[in-house]
Length: 145
Image 1: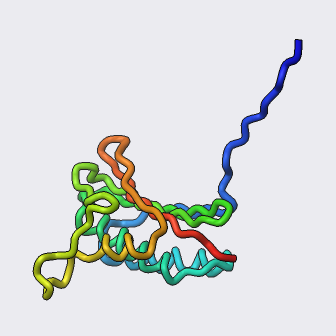
Image 2: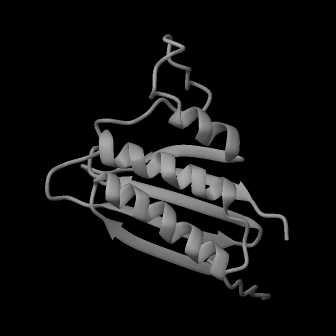
């Protein structure tokens, strides 16, 4: 009798960074600065990621804010993909999903375009619910090395 032994391998990120930040404008700014600093230290392009982190962190600070609860920024590099995740404690307040994001009706509006920027810059993005009361908005960027 032949027995085949299979080893399962978990995909392990080549690089990771995770931080909890206050859901304030300062916290959103710090998220962007920390993301850029880590990507630069890892020798990876940071321009598109900086814009995505800025938008997701701003959304977590404005729409996902719960007094006394932080939001989490995570960066993970696996093979040739950078995954950005921003988790907040307002699972009941999710943006429209991929393909459903629309520009504001008022062309002069000063807000409402953040997820359009994420959709334009990310190769893939989405929303992962839970565990209650949380949600995670994630974006992936293909890296060219």
